[in-house]
Image (cartoon, rainbow, N blue to C red; front, side, top):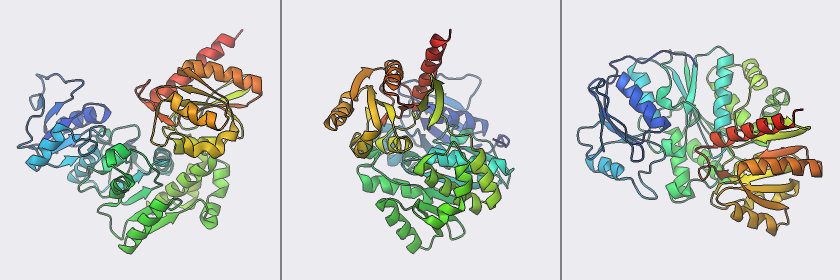
Length: 450
């Protein structure tokens, strides 16, 4: 990540309210204060403390939005469904915009006079890999680049880039609902499957949120849309009819696939058809941003992979343990299961709508499943209905130990942690779940060492 700090007086005279002080909210407060803004911040669960050394910072519940320029609401706090947070209601009543930190980043970059370009990536699955892959391509090509958003570094923790720089921002549906002037030079919608329906009401609401990634784009920009699902096909048709420059992608398009076939064969960290879609999208966006075929191919070959996404966590007695903790829904777990002929599967946590019913065509690949977390019994019911050997073991440590024993007993080469569930019942994040998996494996290896 290259760049410099934003000017100290960039938002002097502006007032912002910040609700929620997790990774995003904390970065927003720190950066806005550094830019000269006045900030009032609050978190219902972890109230902040006042800082006598910072007179422009107020730590207090946000009882009124009068006089504020914007409310920056952390992604996890709803402003509409299933029920709006009280501070969001106050903002709407006061006519104060509710924004995401990505919107503030865009405003800050333009206020600072930088013409750095923006690449925005969204979709139900694959957006983190595509974000990291595109940023890697740009970096290898010598372009100033900063990547973050929903992935890794919070948007407002990114530095100020020069005119030839590129911000590569992973956009969740929650972030996309809270944009105003954000303008991507290239934006990508990879795919859509049911997810986060509690926050968007139904698939129509979810799709509407994702469409915001293309807001404010012109004919000079590039909209990249995967069309291997019906929802995205319709969206691509709509934007084409509106006159945007749209590039559609399909893993079934032989011509597009052939163009990156050789470097993909030499890219060990990008297995499976799903990564083919990610690579096609990253390549299309990279070309629009000025990279040639050789630079794209080099980026594919050298891509190191994404933590917790089909990462090799360890090998014990010849058995590979794959950390795919980022698979927080069935569609993501499907991508991993398709990559292996026979696995011991570790799954469970907080199940999404529909559970794992969509994975039934792949159940024949599962030698045995070990289930953890809150909704283990929900997954167990589906697996038993399809005669998959399954055992509820409760914890990830128990599942990993049992998985090793089962893999040895049944001569299975892979133990796959691809939970198909969210992690928040037992862990603070999918990253924490994946890191704990790696720690368990380290202890298991050490215990086997003579």
